[in-house]
Length: 71
Image (cartoon, rainbow, N blue to C red):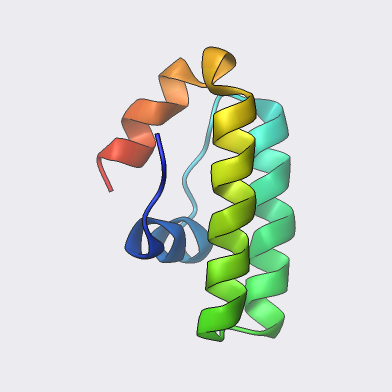
């Protein structure tokens, strides 16, 4: 699964809670970065990092994929 630009923006602006602790920590870090610089380039970089994480850890992200897909 790959997140889109729009889903990434919703993840960065939202306060969703995820089961996978490592993913929640990644989002916390990315949300802080987004809070300091909300440019499209930042969102694109965050999207790339999220997609890299999801690709690498897709086996353990099953429960959280449902939340992301609903965005």
